[in-house]
Image 1: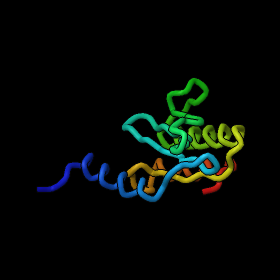
Image 2: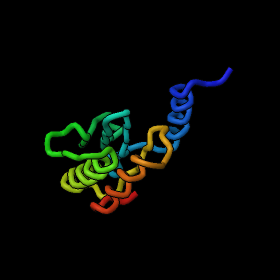
Image 3: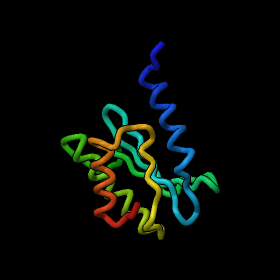
Length: 116
């Protein structure tokens, strides 16, 4: 029997998380994409805390398209990371293909000063 879309993504997530972990020096940049919104978090897995977060639902982010929202979220999370003292992060695509809004967010974060 074939896997559902969510079960397939869950397996991919587990496979990615075996390799990508966030530390105090190099936090994990996790992306969550829903049908309408996009969210990003900087996570320290060792301490179990979220260092910074940004989403397309934030008041200071307004856009006319989903791709523009992803660019704004990428820039916002990068600015918050640099302000908190982090330049190098581990990118966690969270089971999504590195394509479309996920890729746009990553490119915007790189342009704003993050390295991964």
